[in-house]
Every structure is written in C-alpha cells, then in structure tokens.
Length: 200
Image 1 (spheres, rainbow, N blue to C red):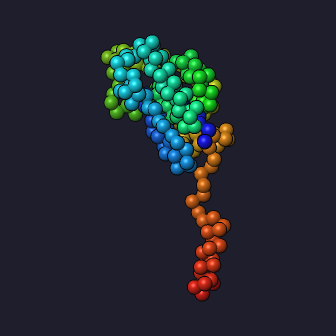
Image 2: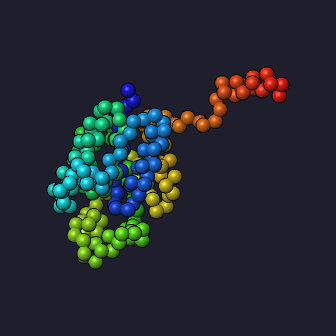
Image 3: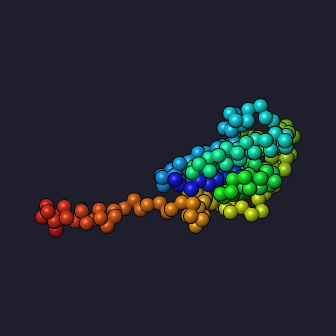
C-alpha cells in the first residue's frame, strides 16, 4: 500500500489554494496515488453545514477537516486540504494528529487579493459590510515553519505546482513522473521492426 500523507494548503481567500491544490491532485493521480481533495468551501456546504465564522466555529470546521485527513492518511490515501485555516494552534493540532503532514502556505499580498477579487468580498469587508472576514476584520496567523511557501503573486500556477511536487519528491512522498518518451526496450522493438521492414 502507498504511504498516505496530508498536503495542507493554507492562505487567505483568493490566494490560489483551490487552483494549485487541484492541479497537484491531478498530477499525483497521474503518478498512481489515491487522492482525495477536501476544499474548504465544499466541506462547509457538506460536513460543516450550519457552522458560522466565529473563532469557535472556524476551529470546529478545521478540526473536522483534520480528522478526515487523518483517517485518509492512515489508510494510504493522499489527503489534500485547501482551507483558509487561519489559526496556527489548530493547524498545529492537525499536524500532530496526522503525523505525515506537509504544510503549504499560499502567500499573496492583500492588495493583490483585492485586485483579483471578482466577487468584491474584500471591498465589502474593508468597507465594514462583512464581519469576521479573515485578513481584514479577522486575524490570519501566517505559518512560521511551513514546508512549502508559494508566492502566487510572483509565480505562475505551473511554477507553484512544480514547487510542491519537487518538495514531495525530496521527502519521498512521491516519485518523479515517468518520462512520457520511449523506454530503451520500446526503442529496441521499433528498431527491430524497422530492420524487418528493410528500412534500416
């Protein structure tokens, strides 16, 4: 059975957690891993329906995601969590519970997030129209020791994905993708076939 692990993406809303994590998930599946993605918004709709955005409710939500990741990880599955998870203490709890835990801090300056914000949520939060909005009227505690830091203002999605995969390879959680070219054996068969047809 493959070794399971949790890849935990944390960062402000709009920083790129969902985009990068979904691309990483696709590549890990291509490499033969069993992968489950737990996106913060999807979890709130299903597993955490009814919870609000107080600190207590946020903590419950992140602990629930952590517990599911723990179950998946111990059963040889790659669990990818993409949730704001603003509080360092709860992320630390999940790290201790899960063990095989790789934290990815998706970093992006607030000014850039306001620019990117198609729904206008940041502007509303800055104007005081939305309460408990992380990064504006509610704190976000940046990870101090994240294994991977993505700077999505400066990096393309491809560069961020490559950075995550490289770190996972270095930690022996995944092997480098197989080369899509011909193997030596394939080349030998092609050469033999061409020789048999009189082309070589």
